Image (cartoon, rainbow, N blue to C red):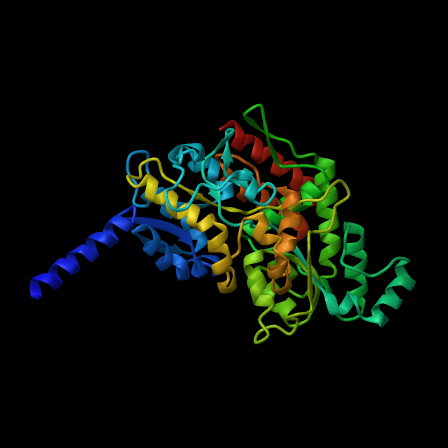
Length: 423
């Protein structure tokens, strides 16, 4: 009898091994936020379906570039997949396998590019080659107090003063008028981002693009300084005008300050990154939960723009687990994974999930993500982007704070960017 049990046990083990197409372990490096925390909940299902054990390491997003720099080289890697914030794709592209060389997948099939939100896959592009796959549609969206614009008294007073209907601000002119109106009523009209971090660079580029200019442009494969001084000064002056309607401490506001001010009911409208939206909708910590309209950002004098910040899942050339790594990437991007993990805080990159009416009821910001992605703008695609970002935000912040005139700041910004490009 003991021998029979032993045979049955061995047969069952063999069946499990044969049922799973892989028997390996992969290491994945990702940033730590609500999306990746939600991902952890689905990994056991992936492991069961494929036989691939996943070691998922999550670290703060600000440390990822440095971590990849010491962990991935042309002939050696500590990770089979890494997540890369899209501005850093140019500096890491030479270490990553082009997406068209990834396998097709045995359990989870390689997704076609057209299932993703508009412009999302461009985040993974460098030199005409996709060097990874976007796994979230991270982009500026706009948040506006629904209760304030629906208030009959506000509607009547605004129409009387400005001559048009109060609504979600659709243009920069409307944004400025509405910010002024609500500030006069004791509610700050706008919350800026002004910390000495990457967020201020994104804010500067958002404004420059809306006024029809870009700090750097790729021209025939060569990066050139393309900032139009007149338009850049106009963008700075408009932002300085918005700062008149911002909360105290407006020149030192980052994520935590902006979220706190908005959640306390002190701010009418501002941009936000999708990953931070759940903090606004948490009734235990937000006075405005359920009172927010989500939309694409207002359109500037020249065009609509929304800063894109997609995270790209990239596969180092040096990995020895290419097929297993691709399986995990395709599982992450699959419709089924999104459906299971969205209730846990997952933000997808797929258009069919962002536009799903069921999810839009509980997560109205999904539709805003899709709409914003239509006008998505990348930060400069440049191997030396970190240095360029520092230059842009240094002079942007100097100009909007009054430490330097807009004209002088723009001239010096261009001079230093030109020096950087020459190097």
